[in-house]
Length: 340
Image (tube, rainbow, N blue to C red; front, side):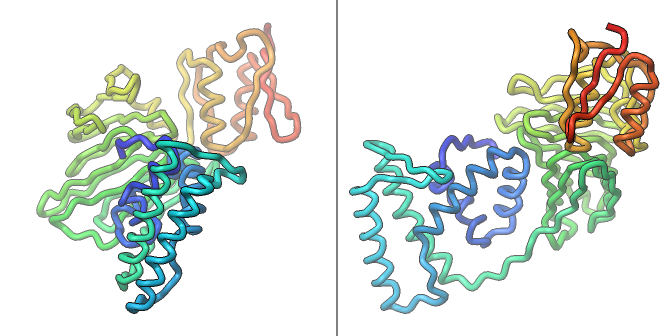
């Protein structure tokens, strides 16, 4: 989703957001669920929009002529209220709007009431999109409906549309990290992985993908893929390529593939890697807050292979290097320089 949403009103004026809320379009549901899962701020913004939406939409199951007349009256009343009060609930507090912003909310109210009538008239049965999800510290392997094998790293989520058929694009939305071994189909149907800033388009191949907040990268092990950005730019990858999203663009950089893929074997490989990178991994994989104590301890380099299937064992192995000491302050791990 390339469009930028700054305020609640931007969501309410987006038809695809309404489709997500009213559960009328599988594709929109998948896109918005992935967008919200990618960033806590996105989820908070969507919840605010839902609060306002629920205060406006009608609750009728069926809409006879009399109900449509009543809906029109209610619409006019709400518009009048918006003009007079010009207030919007925002996370438990009231924000007063004026001028252009007020007019946009009035327009949003109109759009939402009209949409409510349209969606309520439809008898739509929407299936909940299949989701594969892992907890902190968990690595899980799954097989998708087309035979594609996917290994999902800790604290990650993969959403995919139901009812895959050969000849139609197979689409998934990733939040977190996963390794894909994409199955080829007789009709060479495309397999598309949607990340925050770009899509990965393949037919049959093996690659690793990361999509956590503003961090996104791809490491191709086998086959070929095409990356397609929100801005319409494309980049083709060959085996061994590593591409990350940086400065609003795609950039290739040299890496060791075994270091990138070590997580699949519950390992971390470090070759002069700053401690702060390990701290980032701990926060992502285990959901534990980590602090450092000492001058520039976060920049101190780590060499070697550490286990990554148990946080206690990982921290013990870090201490075993002889360079660091670890202590706990309630739920926070504190790493100190043993040789300052």
